[in-house]
Length: 241
Image (cartoon, rainbow, N blue to C red; front, top):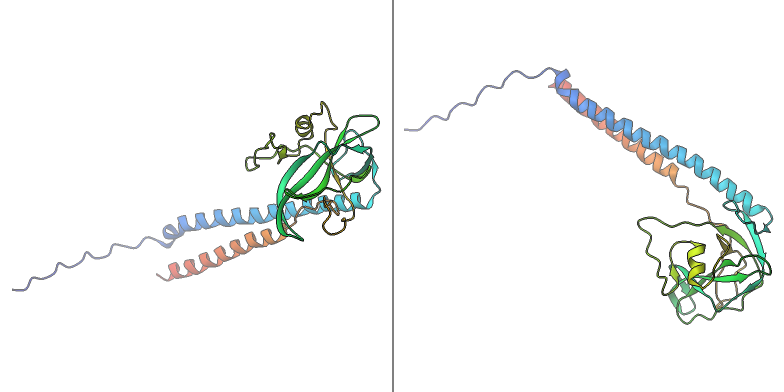
């Protein structure tokens, strides 16, 4: 004899639409508000970055001034004195193309001995870390001040024994070079590039931070729009059940 299969339990009464959509609606609203907030924040950051870039443009167009004790960020300054080539530190690491192919190098930092006042550390520019002959240093440098920054959790540790640093701390670098005191910032030299094959390669202009905040804002707004469309389609389907 064949056995009858037990009949399934009849479906219970369906919950009202309001109860079924309550939690998804709350979650969607929260996520959309968060995404819109992130987009608005990126637009605010874009405005702040545009103001910084405008300050940099104005500073670059202004004439350099004699090196003050505490310059503002992006101020162009100039100094004159005598570079001590026997004291050399390295800053950061970067691979660049050279006549010998791509080479790893870093920025050359040497003290400029002033006729009166404290020595000032000069970032003369990038040079390969091996087989690099540095040109005879100038006695007058123009550039901008790199203020002290001890870096963050992702900044590599300074290798004081090898005089290789990753944070622009003038006092620490000066002490490693055997200088009791130095000006509390580093002068980053700006100059025309030397002939091919000559080092160091100085900076060409003041640094400019990237301003990609508009694209970030559009991304957050786009995600909010996509989430809203998905929710609307889901709500339409739920209402038909």
